[in-house]
Image 1 (cartoon, rainbow, N blue to C red):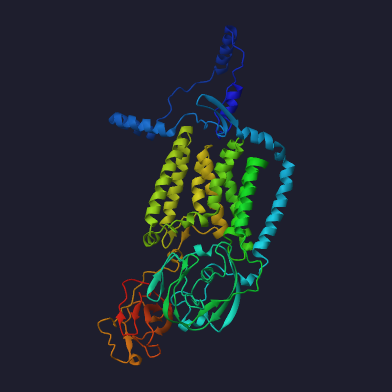
Image 2: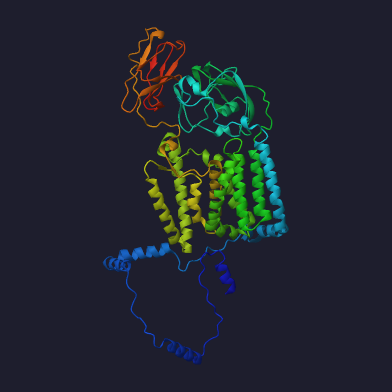
Length: 631
């Protein structure tokens, strides 16, 4: 009985009461004496033998049972099934899969891989060795990070979306707020993987639109000249100046006006063309004065994967120590290498996020990990595979789940990106299947009503805040683990995979983006997408444009203002050339030998609404009307 009791309570959070079975048997004499003693003790005490009062719920249940006995019986059976066993029971203890003991074709095969590994590496599990290796790892990791980010001048770092020009009229009248554009040079350093950083909303370039690709315009001429709003790092990758895998350094030469940016394809990236003039452009030099330019994130990833594998397989510290090692390694790998918050890494921001992340991670341990991770103490190799396979997939979210055509679960994002709805359906089906299996496991232990109650309360709270006026609910990927992880607190192999993946996602979200709010305003979610405002009406169109009038005397016209607006903003060739209340614009200052693209928006107190799609005037006098909708 002693061994069975120990096994039953090994991972239980609420073990059944155990009774002693070694008390001496009672003789008749003892029984009479004890009975007399109990009666004497109760003499003079008036017992209340009245039944307990019937609650309204019991009364309602009896009434329903009398009127609908079959339905009541079915509901009662379903309730008992969902409630699970009483008293609660534990998940059966895990048996290491890699301790092989089986018969194949009549041959008895024994291969105790896990047991042999534990026996072989036992001398390396002594605590003092772990205590020595931890500071060595921290010092080595610090030097690794220094080599990665702190030997290059801080002002030379640029991000993957750095550019000289802002969208629409973001640079003001004639680009004044983004200037000056005098010829100059600039030494820069780009991080790795910038070819994966894409536009999340459509961007209009001339009469074309681009979305879900890096913004690169030009580069196809002999001197490889790029338009000023091109992503500098993506353009440098296309030009062969830096490596997509390791980033690198280069020198950019800023130019002024340039005409006819030619498209081309190189190094897996394709640029757009722009057949007219733009006020800012740049080229790359063949040399740079910067050093220590290679991005070391791949080497850091390989090193950290080896360290985490060694922790599981060789050093094997106590489960809680192993857990905190995973938390720290995963967080700082994201913060310093894979997705730092700004090049170079903003250490003050990272440390500001690290402390609250540790508090949440402690809650994860208390709610889930302490029930599953210790269950694999006799299977270090198996636990390494189960936990780390999901952990590093989550930590490297920018290279795994970010590759899916789903950026945000909003209706606008789902409709504008090809494959988004199909991907969402597949993900939902997979999650439902896994959730049903996890519910089955929880029910078999008797804990389902407890968890179901908490999830219902959480769902109701979420539903309430989702309807707060002026705000939209946004489930960032660091919040999803906070919702799901408590339901993985049952020692199964799938729970280990879930926990590793969810912990990695949480660390990636907090280290890369911080604790972003679960409630955001529509403008936060919209970013640079159209706001849905009114659009002006072009009066000049393909039917009334008179190409026989000299180009210098041409005027283009649009409709009057509507309520709520006080002016117009006109983009000519993607540059704001007019802002005011007038209803026409003269083409006198434009080059008649070049095509021109016009987009118009209402303004209110200097702030522009949505711009129309481009209308095009070709050099031969052909006017092409704009497509419907905003640009």
